[in-house]
Length: 155
Length: 365
Image 1 (cartoon, rainbow over the protein chains, first blue to last red):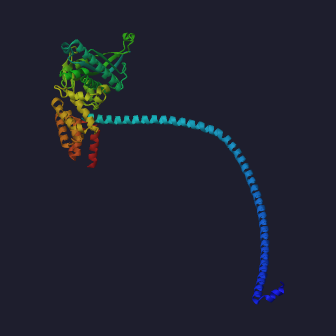
Image 2 (image 1 turned 120 degrees about the vertical axis):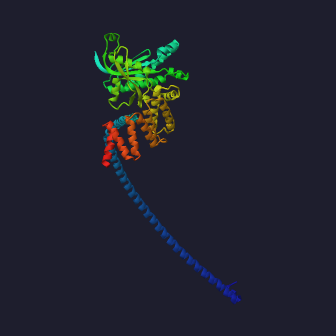
Image 3 (image 1 turned 180 degrees about the vertical axis):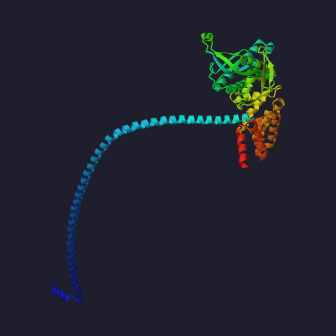
């Protein structure tokens, strides 16, 4: 059957439906085109964002590397100074030790002498305390004797 | 080397030992002599050492033979020697009273054998003889008339009735040279002794107040001594000196302020002593003292009364005068107290307390 035949036999409703279908197809095609266009734009933006991210990452990497380098440098310098200080301290300690050793020996001797002296003094103090105690007893005895003698003479 | 020294000579004798020997078995007599000698040895060695005598014939010498002991003291300080001789005499009597032998005699209710003492003071010659040196001995021989007198004086102790410690006139005078020895004597007796050819004045110790008698006894003899004395004074015919020695001991205890519980007992003991002792002044003084210083006995009126009684028997008793004056002062009887101090100063111009008090009264006028 030819097209003309179709139109001859077709009613107006059929024609309207046909037109509607055609129009829908056209709109669909146009929407597809628009979507495709948007998708492409989004893809372009994503690509741009990815590029930007890469750039950022690269910059971060280089910043980190730089920071790391600075830190390591600083740490090495500090470590070196610390070592230097420790070395110096060690030398000072050795020097102090050398100076302290005779003092220590002398101090030990002094301490021993002091302890000995303290012990001797303690003994001496005890002896003196004992003597004082005896003396006090003797004085008390003398006082008692004087009192007794006075009583004797008054009886 | 011969040396003239002034010695105080002490003769100690166990009284009636010959009569006792007749009534004892030989063993019992020997026990008595052994105990006597041991007691004498302990007392004399302990006393001389305690009072600083060197011994070895340098400042003292002693010997014991049978029932006798002879002691010479010649330290150079005569009053010191005299005082020590009196102390030794007292301690010997006390030690013999408490001896093992006499403890047994007392328990059996028999009379304790007594010790007689004679003391004299005079010049003697001290000499270490050649024969002693050859024997390896260094103790001196001491000779002199004073020893004979001491022996005779001791023989008079049998007639004594108080302490039976007799002293010669020279010792009596030494005791009265100062007030440092509180000893009283009975009236003198003029005795003619065989061989001496002249009358000798003999005095008996009637009171000897000395705090050292008991405290300076050897420690081994101090145990139970007071109890033995307390027991002795409950027996018939108690020797009067035991009362005085015991009361003097209680005076010390009460003076220490820790023996209030004794106060009733000492008053009873003193009153018992008044019945036994002829020389009562000292007992009245002791009673007066207890009523001044005894915590539960303190009564100045009673004390004053006792000192008045003491003075009525012995008007020269300085101790009684002094306590009387102090009591009157405490009672606030100023005029009577001043008068009493004046009496003391009248008899003893150097009495320090009377001088001080009278000066105070004069300043207060």
